Length: 170
Image (cartoon, rainbow, N blue to C red; front, top):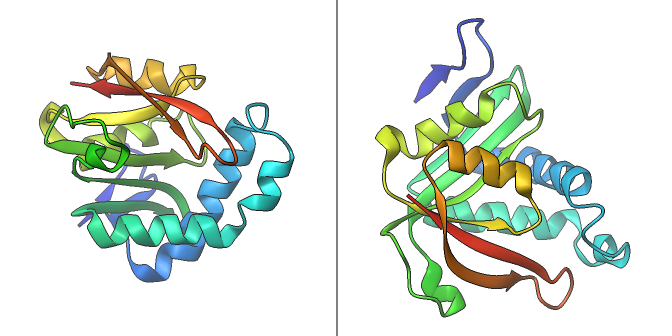
């Protein structure tokens, strides 16, 4: 699958491959440091090395039927994956059969996130996702795409970051 984003020949969207893991992990790390720096203690960064993000990315590649990257030249500038809902892993029954596992964009606000979401969950497919309670920008994006909070909460990385997440569904 290769598609162009936007009319201006923006980033190409293609299937993610195992070779992309280091670049995706670097994107995730960079976005976490940018987006969540004020939400986690400085000691968090010492407990979550790049190998943690790489393991997370590999685990998504193993289970996600839809795992895509957006690339500009050799640079990974976006990452999305979706698949069967996994809510049972946190002892909360799933709300939908499909889940958006992750969506990261290196430069938010330029439409790439929308292209990746549409590629991962086409035709407004019913799905669930978990988003950090404090990430209001992401919640606004998901609301524009038909997702609404349904009341479930849990804490992501309770031992290190303790970030509350809410579940949104459409």
